[in-house]
Length: 344
Ligand code: 13P
Image (cartoon, rainbow, N blue to C red):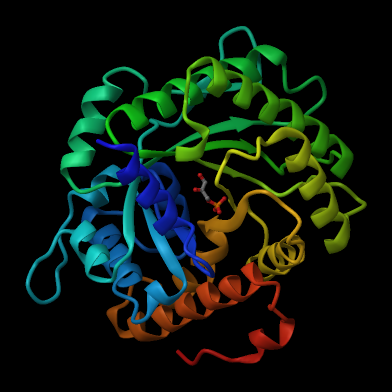
């Protein structure tokens, strides 16, 4: 695999006005989302849901790439001529990638801290994914903020795992999306979120440097700098944008081509509004984009509800959310864009 191929994957993922759809919910996560709507989380329903997402007409106007879960990489469509899901995306000119971590486990001796698993056998799995048509990978580390948390050991252990994942991905020709997620749960202030994110990013980039990861051939995925979800004083949109950009300028090397935001549990329209405020600043060395899961999918799932009769309306909702976020990347989003009602 040549650097040129990795470069072209980076370029396609960071295409102007486009973002990434994170549709890589693990079995427990998709089950939680489906259960809330009384949809049974079986292979068929998961396949039908994801096929519906990926077949959305015009999706590639605003979506450059999709992050898949292992099961989806191997599933075929159930409508028309059966195609593999990566093929459906390729037909839409959307770049397929895959989540390769195996979720989190508690870190021994550090109550409340998590370590991401999945390094064993990773090199072989990556080779297989590459053969299955994947072009990029994602690994998510989770850092919680609480009284006495996070500990330095948890930050550094996760940073080292992220760096090894990234090095292995580049070795087999896959662009790594390095994702340290600082959870928004808790009553902490926006200042505390900034402090922890800064520490986590510094540790991640120190590890990436030590493991000789090529920063130009990876993407960073992380959250916006926010007040904790239960903090009584919620920071204004402008404050979020300012703190997010300040934090990144301090901790993310200019060699990184792009930073893509996770939504982390923010309400969908609020995530778009904040993205818009952040992207209004052109004075940054990296491209900024979105890699939303919930903030793109929540309204879609609520309309779909597991019924084929709702597919068209659900796809219209996905197209609309993707479009709003695309406008936000250009700093051109406004609340008026939301007036459009989607009939079911
Ligand atoms: P959310 O946007 O729902 O946080 O999901 C993004 C993601 O990929 C988390 O790993």
